[in-house]
Structures are given as C-alpha cells and as structure tokens.
Length: 231
Image 1: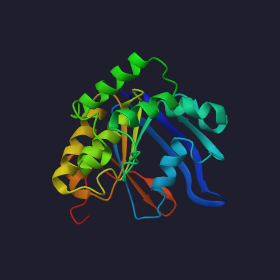
Image 2: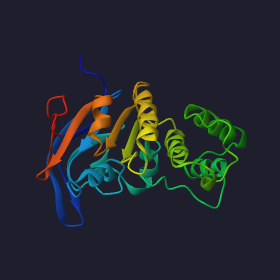
Image 3: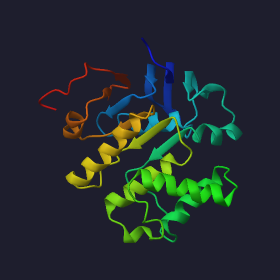
Image 4: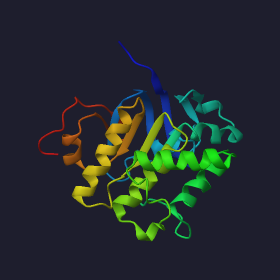
C-alpha cells in the first residue's frame, strides 16, 4: 500500500537561468523514505534540491512539496514552504560570531518564533536530539567538524520539518564521524520524515540502504535498490 507522498513531480524541467539542467522529471517520495541522490558533479543534484525549496523557481511542470504547489508559489509564501523543509549543508554554514544557542535563535526568529520561552525550549530539544544538549553555550570554532554538522542538523530540525534535504552532509568529515552523522539522518527518516541526501559516498549507502536516484544525461532514473559492486 502506498504511503503519503510528501514530494510529487510530474513533467518537471529544472533550469539554471535559461540552461536546462534536468528534463521531464516524474517522481514520488513518501514520508519515511531515505533517498540518495547520486551522479557526477554538474549532473543537477544541487539544482534539484534548490527547486524543492524554491531557491530556483519552477518554470515548467507540476511539483507538490509538503503540500505546496511550486508552480503557483508566490514569493511571500516561500518562508512557509521552508518551515516544512530542513536543509543541511556540507560546509555547516554556522554564524561564527555567535554561540550555538544564538545561531539557532537567529533561525527561529527568522522563521516566525516569538516567545522567548518557546525558543529556548525548542533549541534545547533539537540539541538533545543530536547529542549536543550541553554544548549550546559554545562558539562554532570550539566544536569539532562532526559537532558542527550535528548543529546544522539540529538547525534543520527546528521547525519540525517533514523533509530533510542534505547536500553532501559528510563531504568534509572523516569516516568515523560520517558514520555518526549518517546514523543520525537514518533515525530522522525513521520518524516519518523524508530524508534526501546528495552524496558520492557509496560505502555509506551500502551500510544504510535506501532508494537511489541516479542523475545522468539531464534526467533522473531509479535503479534497482542495490549498489553495484564496482561503484
């Protein structure tokens, strides 16, 4: 029995300015799906993710993401879409001039949180989820790379999103730390979230099987759910 589609694309063309990057995409992703996006650099993975969170406007085709029709989405509604989506970047993108707590507070205020009490409680909840409950007072440079990536995952969880988009989340991390981050992302998907991970790490994909979307020749295909041994 099919689950609940949280991302649905029909006949979607993705453009960077006037350049066609991906064509005629048809895709359905459900809550709880763990999805890997694989392909060479320049194959459209980042453009695809940017389309999902409306950084790139959808010009052709139909796409429904977390209940929003992207083709009809007005700019003033984009923040409401983004509250449903948590984004994890390869380079963490933490503000270096403020503590972890204040990094998270900045995001919460920007997405409409008002109550000081609720903000502080929300920060503590997400930091505990990623195993950093007692590190909120620290500055980013005082944390290891793995801890900084955990903070960026905590930031992505602040609004209890339905979708997590992770663009090479282990790209700057050592293998052991990468393993910890992947375990964390898998546990998030098991809480009824759709987790999409752009990655080149086939070894990690073997350890944590999921759906695979192959980006190649301006389109996306979904091979059988096994990683080829020579990948």
